[in-house]
Image (cartoon, rainbow, N blue to C red; front, side, top):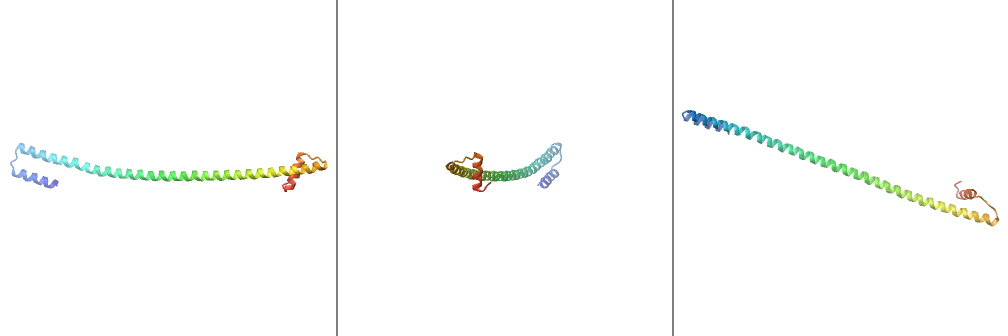
Length: 141
């Protein structure tokens, strides 16, 4: 395109006699066409570069979003595991407390039975002795 413009300008210059006005007009055409070329080319290159940088920016934003989602899912999984572990520990502690309460109630009932038997015969045993007898009966002495 620029060669054809230059060729047309050269042809016009050959056909017309050169006067200062003609020379000035042709010089203005040459300068204006080179200005157009120099101002249009960088814009096109800049436009290509800006779309590339925008594409890279979009790619990084998408990658950042993926990484953020991955982190959130991992954190939610950790919290769910911690909550499940806490719930299992709570259930286990409640089971142990119920079993302990049951064993204490059984031991107290056995202590009362032994105290009643001793009271019938008129024998007296201390609280510690009754506890030892109840432990002996349950086999944990």
